[in-house]
Image 1 (tube, rainbow, N blue to C red):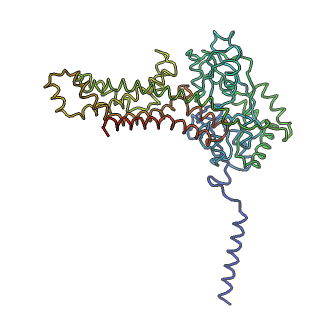
Image 2: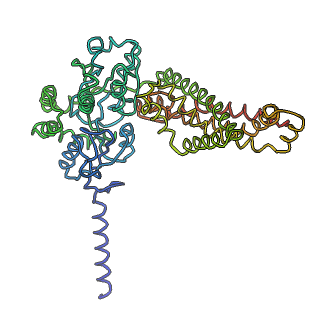
Image 3: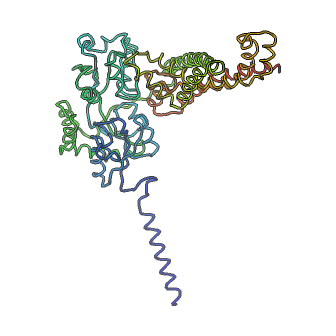
Amino acid sequence: MSVSTPRRSVRVALLLAALAGACRPATPPSGSARELRWGGDAEGGAPFVEADPADPTKVRGFDVEIAGMIARGLGRSPRFVQVAWASIEASVERGDFDVGLSGVEDRPDLRSRHAVSIPYYEFHEVLAVRPADAARYATLRALKGHRVATLGSTQAYAILIAARDSLGVIPISYDDDVHPYDDLVAGRVDAVLLDNIIAERSLRRSGGKGFVIQPEPVATGHYVAVLARSDSALRDSVDALLRDRMRDGSLEKTFRAWNVWNDAQARYIDAASARAPSDAGSPTQNPRSAAAYLPSLLRAAFVTLALSCLAMTLAVAAGAAIAAGRVYGSAPARALLATYVEVVRGTPVLLQLFVLYYGLSSVVRLPAFLAAVLGLGLNYAAYESEIYRGALQAIQRSQLEAGRTLGLSEWQIFRLVRAPQALRLALAPMTNDFVALLKDSSLVSVITVVELTKQTAIYATNIGSWVVPGALCALAYLAFSLPLARFARRLERRWSGA
């Protein structure tokens, strides 16, 4: 009896513990149940989300404060998760965080794929132009045949794509919202179409000089919080909290603190806070089919192919000249060429593209496509030169001495003896470099060239999935690279006599 009683007590205790564990809410896969993980992009900067200058480990901005309001309303503490702006929607769907807040724009296709909150801020798409052009470029229609810059994968970009077909506007896509205004001032583009918040921030940054903002808005949009499609219950809680913060003036106080409050926003907040929950949001619509994107993908594929071929031609020509100089040149020439090769190989091609396009703009304003060809071509010329130099030095000296004995000049020895054999040795690595250059051409989107990978990213963002766009992009790259590899193997077999 004295033994069985303790055992029974242990069993009862274990049973109660198991029941308590079964009733306890499940812990999220990452983070704490008392945390609200929210994702944003600190690179976007104020007033949305930016690193706090006083403590760079923290973030600040009106989206940061709104995330804090939502977290406190849910009885949780906010925890920021850094994510690229273009990846917020995909990341929230895969569970990296609970809520995405970083100037996320309300769009019908967004609502068709995710759980989306009521809009909490109304913005306007506005045109920015140089002061001298303010009178003649007051509308998009007036910009027919002119270059208009914007941030890719935004409502403004969609507007420009539609205007390209209907009004003849030339859309120029950027990966950030700083360089469009820099290029406007520099004369590379004729106008910029972006949110009034971004436009006004850029105008303050420039000291109010270089461009003006047109008073008539092109379109109206709204910022929302985005959640995973399955998180509709959390979305409903977020909606209720946002309405409460509208009614008690918390949102107005935050927006005033960040200098983004205006009369239009006051009217919107009054209407939105009184609107019934069933009235919130935009109507859903299905994303466009793959066939609708094919013309854009084909144009981008042609840009990629043309860019790669031109850059490789430059790389081969410059690489051959550098290799010849390092083999046959004087000591100063060899030292200078060796320095070029090491500097180019030792620095990122992305940095070189920025220097060519932006860094040299005060000296020479290269068109984006030309800067891309020069950047990739001169970068790969350094690698090609090492291939050719190694191939030239691999030719046996006895063959060169035999040519001199026969009375051939150095140029004849190079042309008839050394170069043909070196080309055979260099063919395989040259093919590898061309395939690598094809893939590296995706980097030129940072200087506004919309090539295949950039257009694919825009397509994937618009439909909310990388499966079909990624497969189409991969097929296009394979269609470019596989025939080249087969052609190179045929040449190798032919030259080897096999």
